[in-house]
Image (cartoon, rainbow, N blue to C red; front, top):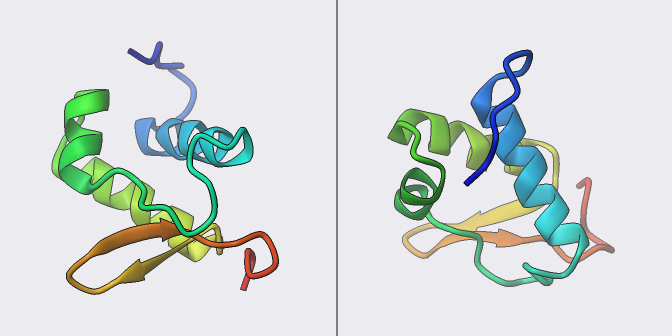
Length: 81
């Protein structure tokens, strides 16, 4: 369980955790990230908060979505696009 810092929104802290997991190889390129439902269960947050995390990772170019399937880690050569 994450220890929440009071000076940052939970969704930003969750995004940091997921980016760290991507960096350390827990989620290699082209692997599926946890779903919104899985993030809600793991971090004990509202569905809207979990959705913000996935949206943020896509906006930062760290992840991409496949409609009807999920959100995946972008390969390093494509990250940031």
